[in-house]
Image 1 (tube, helix red, strand yellow):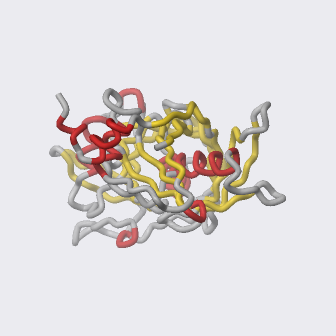
Image 2: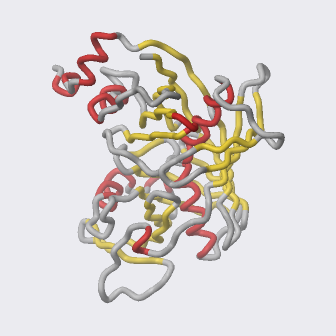
Length: 294
């Protein structure tokens, strides 16, 4: 089995090209591939299926509706490896479980390969039932909801970018309780499908610092849908303008949004290298034996 290692703003993936939908990608195999000591190491696995469908799995093996950084990586792979030719405006369409996403090539490397892409992420979703989010029975309608975790009330803006997000504003992302409150909010009963959790610090109206606890992964160096959700939530609160630079540990994404329209995200896509999985390792991984290895 051939693989490619790639990343979008240091959110890293193992990419498996499967244009004829022949590969069986089990949860066992995903967990083994993403293992940073026994496998390749990644935040998730992208299987590029027929019709450029991004079949994305989190590092824990769970199936995911949408991945903003993964869409950029998928588009880069498809263009650079000749799976698709961009239209006159540089656009290709990537299929996802959250619907088709137009992706436009906006920057290339010196060798002509794709360096930077712009994604039309579609409009954000705020209806709690569609996120999904279950507010308390006595909760008032509003932009912000309160969830109780570890005995503390935490105010979160709830939004879907094809996948669920809970955005909370902090004074300093450097000291934000990402690794303690993050997993508690992720698995809170109010989020029946679990949720991604964003800790956002407003620097000024055009810049935000962000850390993200990703559902099924943990803290990642970047989250594309999380950056979009954070900008949307902060925009609705009146804290940022229509275009915002989002600084994440892995780099910077640019997010544009005007209420009523699509969220547009721009960022890098990088291929690190290519290889072939050892057959004995692959058999063990598919059988789940890598998860019990000493």
